[in-house]
Length: 230
Image (cartoon, rainbow, N blue to C red; front, top):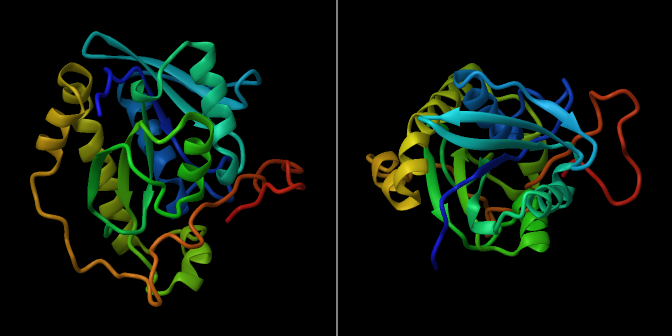
């Protein structure tokens, strides 16, 4: 599968103060840190139902996108942005929280399935699965029935610090990714073997219950219909 140079990075998460520091917002943390380091500022665009920011990284232009839909409806804003700027799926890196990796681990991946993550599921439904991903480990609660509450809560300090450190590590390799591509960035980022001590779900399947929402934290929220925070 061939991937094109990355021109945009989408962070998956949920807008509003209620969700700002939850594990499920790791994708937002990533693009926020990229914007901070490179002097960018997000602004909401109704056309996409997303916050958008444009930065320059080592001389190259990069778009940063934060969908404002519920997590399980992230694909609509991503598709709208992609179509407007005539991008291809392979030119968009999607950053998200990952249950299958422990806090402190971050991995790049070229395409694949959604692994039960409702944000990825909806993005893939709208643009197909052939886009690179940045998987930010948040660990697993130990049982699939606990996943929704787990990702919608803030991690204790001992877990949040490694997650944010991993975000910083990923930001550090973005110039490599933009200049040399996903594979070279993988080689730099994946310098340590994944910690296999991460908890796995009991009863099989790591992804059940992944995905979280937006609404709360914005006055009134969107709510209703089949948009939900799980």
